Length: 234
Image 1 (cartoon, rainbow, N blue to C red):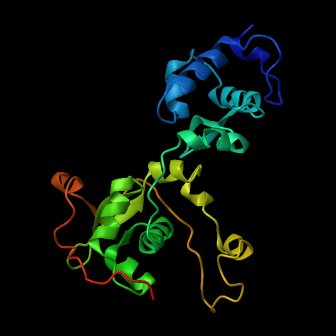
Image 2: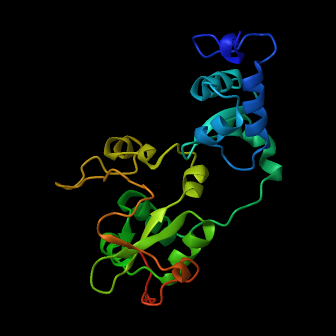
Image 3: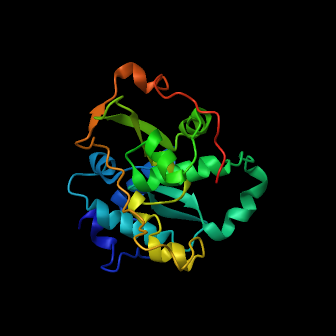
């Protein structure tokens, strides 16, 4: 009998001891400080293990417990059950709230990536300061992707895995679309003609119109992005 035979077809785990492969996967996920991908698990588990079935079984096993196995940024991690988050409220560090300008900029980057600073300003209708982008870079939620193949070769920005983890998204495609934004009241139901919400794409590969960054640019903010004086909202 193989390690996976105790996993029922519906993905549930029996009342007896967990199979060895499931116990190993559980230990790896529990001990890891970062979400773990299926490929990484496959390398550490016995050869021939059905990683997808194991993750499905563990997810079902922990579904009603104090911690849940959830998918974030395309990987897997244990997280406190949402209905019990209040218990840990006293241990949580109070985080600094982002400014409206930073939130607007983050949303534009998430939906329009890869996007340049000039394109962000065009969409917002106001200038975007270097400080706003610096704050988002410091949080680790956005990154400099490359340089646009246009005059001046402006830097392009995109989101990171940390962004997906922060907002509990399996992928950037899980961001709400036009109908969801209307239903939540975040958008007026009578939007202008031609208005649309783009389908986000955070693929790591550079697009045809992007060139890679130089190595030293990964650590320094690009010098040709001059800081404007105004970062107010209209």
